[in-house]
Image (tube, rainbow, N blue to C red; front, side):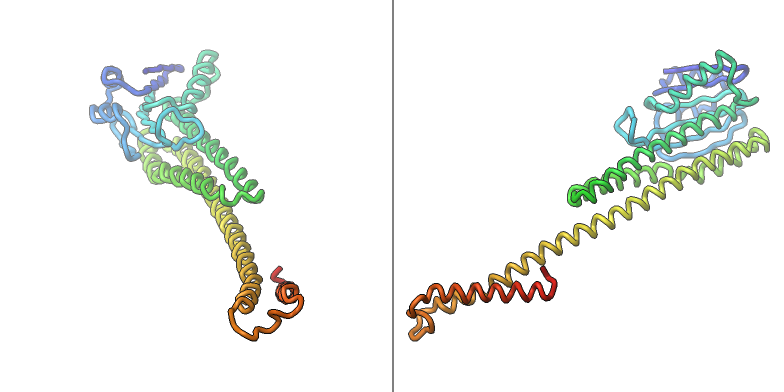
Length: 304
């Protein structure tokens, strides 16, 4: 599907799941290199920047967990950035791009857009919105972490082991998706300065700044998760120790009772107490005394 937006002399073409015919048409209209046109037809595994004589070709992957329309937790966006045009290509609906296009279309109609004199400025506003959407994704993770923290201290440590592992997996996937952004954006800054002008490098530095905000926010979430995992593990260990302690105390209490029962149950002659008046009650008294002594000792040692 092709969507086209125009403001003054700048054209933005947005491709969703581009077909060969759509790409062929754009290749002729904007003089797109055949290698780049071919790459637009299917997703690419790695991000990259290529500088051509009439455009910059950029590929980036953006993690998404809260609102995604495919079966993957990352979305690819390809950018072809010319002097007076920009082409974005993706393979499923990307909510931040969709929302930005509606705002851009309205502002263009009422002539309230302030996007600068070339398409590089439009690229800056688009990618800034994409990075800000990543911040919202991490805020969604913040909510999940806060929920985990509350439930840990509500006594749900066992249930939280799986919840912590799932959030950890999402954060690792997030980190993996943006792992090469810093390197790619550094290359983009160099290519963009040569393709446009030195003044535009300030905008490209601002794009890197948006990435570093996300990286810092991600690291904060990972540190929070690490501390929550430590706390949860500590509480689980404490609970297990308490259980073991209770079992050990029960075994210590029952041991003298078992020993007394075994001794007086032996089939031997001249067994003391056995056969005496009230021998049953005497044996029960001995058992009760043994239990009382054991409990008193445990209390004295503060094991109970």
